[in-house]
Image 1 (cartoon, protein in one colour):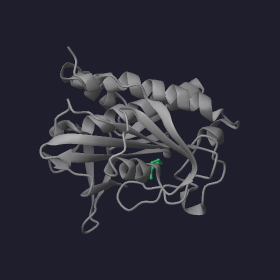
Image 2 (cartoon, rainbow, N blue to C red):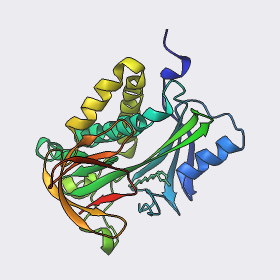
Image 3 (cartoon, rainbow, N blue to C red):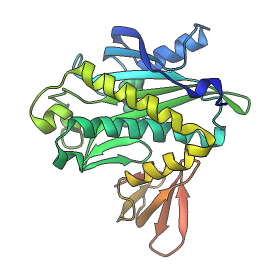
Image 4 (cartoon, rainbow, N blue to C red):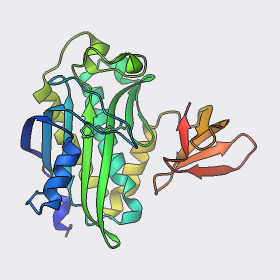
Length: 260
Ligand code: BTN
């Protein structure tokens, strides 16, 4: 028998017109002891302080995009494999992007480590997973997703690097439809975090991985030194495996390296 919390039926539990951050709202509710069911989705038309990885801000014009967070209790997942949550959600978002793009563009959809979704050289979605640990097990997880759907004007600093479904295709999309597809994919992929399916999840993640086996430049966060390397994959702990030009492989955590 599968553990109780393996089955997930994501549903919009709370809809807000404006909020500082849907991730914060879910975490606040959890900390306040509110009953938040597995798969509960908090969604907001606008965020005043949307958060990205590290200290980044998440930009999204009010009403144009999907900004949501899903609560989950992956208590059957060991802490050492928590990266599987990034993988399953990244794949769900990538599938959603592909579903709504014409074939030619869909072919350029990739997951950029750890779990940004790219179309060609531009970012269309970002994911922020936060976990609450109780001792050595996972007490709760929040999967925050920002997907640029009908965004048509990014601030200048993002104009080159960011895109949306609307900017790519020249027409707007029904947010409800995109949301329904995304939630269905999240539910399907959540099944993959059972012990015997993690390998399949990992394989699928690598099939979509941006720059896999491609020589490219990377930069050390500390010191800013640039170097050439070939991305050989991501290990179970979610670290980037880079084959260095001088030979040998080194693993890097998110804080240690960035793509150039
Ligand atoms: C990143 O690209 O660095 C991650 C971006 C994650 C953005 C989403 S929007 C909904 C949820 N609430 C937040 O404050 N952040 C995530």
